[in-house]
Image 1 (tube, rainbow, N blue to C red):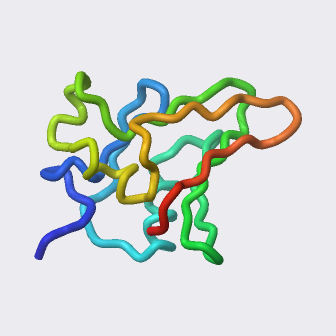
Image 2 (image 1 turned 30 degrees about the horizontal axis):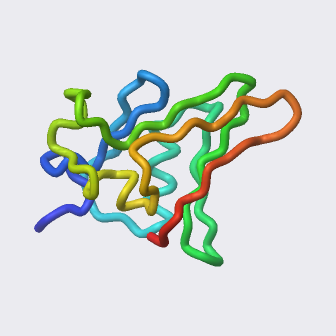
Length: 116
């Protein structure tokens, strides 16, 4: 059985700032994927499903800017990933990386462009 999210395809890895994070290989419902993403993410960042439109939202609750990277041609961590076949792409994010601004008064977020 093939897994949509799998290390051999590079579809289970992402970075928050310079920290490499990997979800477990497998096939997920949107809800269970969000649960798995939050399992590996630190407490200042959260992943949410906007169920009404099938989009993913990452929220930054910290006071510092946070970078989320789904692909890099120069980073060895993303060796098995492709620019159009990586965790971010499967979540609906079309850029290789994003920065979510830090805040002291409100939560900032990035929302996927596509539907999972």
